[in-house]
Image (cartoon, rainbow, N blue to C red; front, side, top):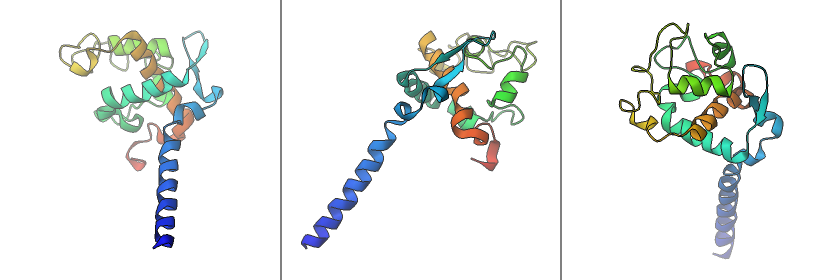
Length: 163
């Protein structure tokens, strides 16, 4: 009986320590991983661990239903990996351009507004999840999107072969 209790407590402590380790995800990321492009000029910024956590939570709540794993469910040819973001017009490969897109999205070639089709601040009355997002929230989401290729590598935006 005592051996059984010892084994049980050992297993429970291992499980508890495993789950505890997952909560410190953002803190474990080094500054290189948390450094993302801020603007088109090439200026960069280091995201704080709080911004990393917040960006992940907000992305999962507001964006992941269509962009889980960096894919785009409505158009699998265009994902959130850096290559697709860089080739868009205008390029969406920095925080400022992603924030601009989340406020008023345009087609991949930049020619047409798609605010009524894509969740955005401009169309918050149609997409309620966007209603309460602040500029800081959009900043954190953009940071999350730009940081993911460093963490998930080819899985981010890689499509259904990974997810």
